[in-house]
Amino acid sequence: MKLFIASDIHGSAYYCRQMLEAYEREKADRMLLLGDILSGDGDGTFRPDASVTRAEFIRMMVSTFGLTEQEEITYTKVPEWAVPFVRCAAAQGFLLNYKKDADFGAKLSRQEAVALLLRYLDFTASKDFDTSKIPDYKSIGEIYRPYVLAAVENGIVTGYEDGSFKPSRILTRAEALTILYQSAGSIYNIS
Image (tube, rainbow, N blue to C red; front, top):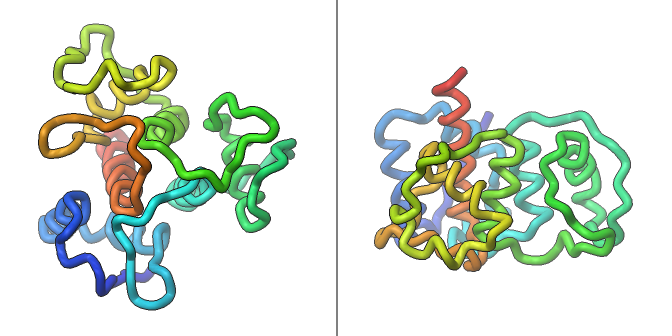
């Protein structure tokens, strides 16, 4: 494994600060693992505020969890480099109900990313979960609500500093790394 050091983090992004604080709390094992999952852009930068596409996030998930089993797919808009990763996601059953012409190069919303991740993890929220803990709960798409609730309840997402989730906001690289880091910890804690 390798540790990726980025020259552009500077603590400017909220999620990057969380990651650096976690590293300082001696959780370097998961940080090292994720250094192999989400690498920089080849120029020494991480670009924490850059957006993530469906295909990129699926690749990150497949790499995080070491998935290898694949099955054929019929999607027509998958970047060539991403085909093996989407095949792995299909074999694991965590893809959402995408249409055949779904664009895997499209930017990914936070609620869709959480749904993909929680479908893989198979976590659920308790029936009595207090939705008032998420100030913008009603703006979360109905099909995504159970996944977001489970992610919050299991500590995979905490929302922004004001507690909001901002479901339609496009997922950033820093946020992707954070939720993958948190999910790896959730698996570690229950294993």
